[in-house]
Length: 382
Image (cartoon, rainbow, N blue to C red; front, side, top):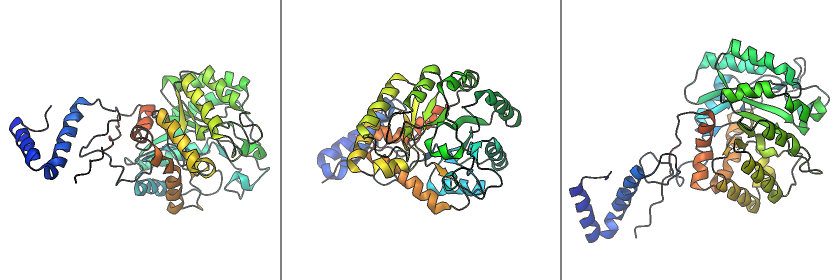
């Protein structure tokens, strides 16, 4: 389809011939508009259009928060509607409502498990119930929010059917994501965390079939290893991926953690690349500022990861991993969003659209939303 009727295009052509500098921008816009009709939707084309995203002038912060905890481990939470206001003020239009699947005891004075070694932090459905009730009462439309089931005790899978039945009975059709579930999380070892075993994973079939049938993605926290043994727990994630190849698995933090601060990034990338190649339903979760603080903050390392993500532009989603405990405020959320978004600056246009603008997240959930195309930079006119 031509951008203008034929006579007008002829006049523009003549004007360009006579006044090249003055009319060059119009010619470029005309060609780009014509290419819109020829380009397939969602192909990551970089076009000049009224509704395109201009990376030179618009924020690089992610418009999706795929890993956001509306409830803390213990103590008071930031009110639900206040957290929603943080998203609006930050330009985040889609987010997951994670609870915390593991709670500190009700009589504990702690809000964060690391401050209370020895205190049990065990799976509980309470946070998800509160999230579900708050969501149904508030019913926000912008941002678009997705409730997530975070209570499943994957080390004791025999308990999961009862929890799943409760979600279906109390909140039918409302919970469209699963996790963050802890396969193995070394940071919780001092709080009675029970790592999942390969035998436990073999017993997940019933609830994994339900998630598959409902097209529900599942975020798993599965530490890759620690500084002494960087790939110590890799076999657990591989067991999940091998056993349940049709489930949409999201690997929280790409397996990195505070306990794995010194891994050679080339080795980590090689492992992650192999997993992506072997398992087409695996998606990476780029949440948590620990990724930036321990890895991405080094320019050469950040370039390695950006190159890797550019090669897999449809296989990652962003997130803050913000935990909404009452001792935090908007300034904390804004900082965590900015820090976890810095990698976006080094992404290609295709990867930026998929990750920062949310197309990968939309595809995982089966949403009809479409991320804007990226504006093509105009050439210099003189």
